[in-house]
Image (tube, rainbow, N blue to C red; front, side, top):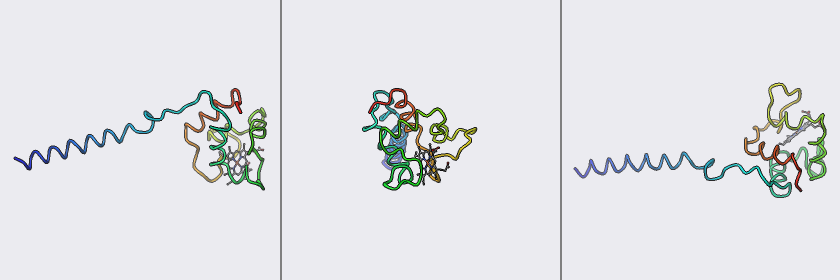
Amino acid sequence: MTKKIIFFALILSVSWLGSCYRDVEEELYPCETTGLKYSVDIAPIIKANCSPCHIGTLPTETFFGTYETLKAVMEDPNSSFLCRINHDADCPENFMPKDRSKLSDCAISKIEAWAIDYQP
Ligand code: HEC
């Protein structure tokens, strides 16, 4: 009898733990896409994912490691910036970040939302 109770208690706690585990990230930390600032929200994403190639002291490619330069690149109507990070199937250019995994959906949403009013 005691064994059965322990057994059911185990099953219950395992499934309870499992259900906690599942709803972690998205519900506890929804992706914030309003009131974004370059200094707080965008610069860290660029720094983490586009360095050293685009933001180093000796960038090997188009430099966008500052507010002004990133804004200029993204405002350029011919820029492939968004199509590259979105891995758009019809993007004529190489996807970015080069040779690394795609940015998270949240990071892409933040960059797109920020590029509406470019808050510093
Ligand atoms: C490992 C190095 C590397 C990383 C990391 C990297 N890039 Fe690039 N990027 C390149 C190279 C090399 C080119 C030029 C060759 C090409 O077009 O594919 C390039 C070109 C670009 C261009 C086109 C620039 C222009 O003047 O037309 C954009 C936009 C771009 N990258 C965005 C990004 C973004 C955004 C990130 C970070 C999310 C990133 N890249 C991360 C190496 C990198």
